[in-house]
Amino acid sequence: MGIFLTAPARTDQLPKKGMYKLTDNELYLDDDGSIYLAWRNFQTDNYTWIKSNNWDIRCSHGHDIGCKYHQIVQVKLSIAQLKFKGYLRQSKGRWICENIPAKYLKVIDVSGHVINNLFYRMLKSADCPVTPKYIQYGYRVGVAFNINWFLTGKKKIDLNKIYDEDWNKE
Image 1 (cartoon, rainbow, N blue to C red):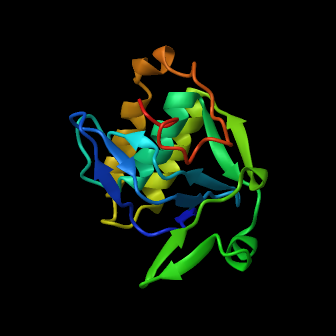
Image 2: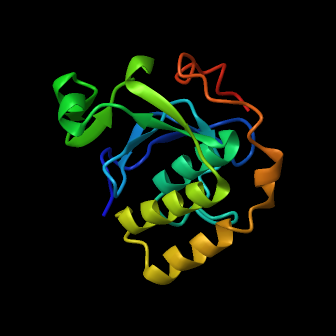
């Protein structure tokens, strides 16, 4: 089963109602060993469900990236390499991720089905608080009806700009 490699999300509230930006980078280790990045300064509503952030908002960050760009960012380094190079480290009892250079990242195109299934796996891995099974199933079914998918995906991820605050503005 997958696991979040970084601590629970820290976000800053933005002037636009209901919007936040990630303060820290987040890493998720998927079931197949792939590591995905939700980068600092990415703007999100933090919703794991319609107008709700009752469960681990890290799940929504990865899903929001996939829905916005129809792409996600995979890390080309292993956990050991991330630690050795100092990109994944402990600080004050929390696992944090420093900015990972573009040369260690890869953009992957995703379909709505693929990103929704990733969201479901992230919900299963969430641990703050533990997401009940009925919530996991309900949320997975719910995101399948996201008609906004057809209006997004026009802007593509630029690995050389992902940490740039201006590039991340809505």
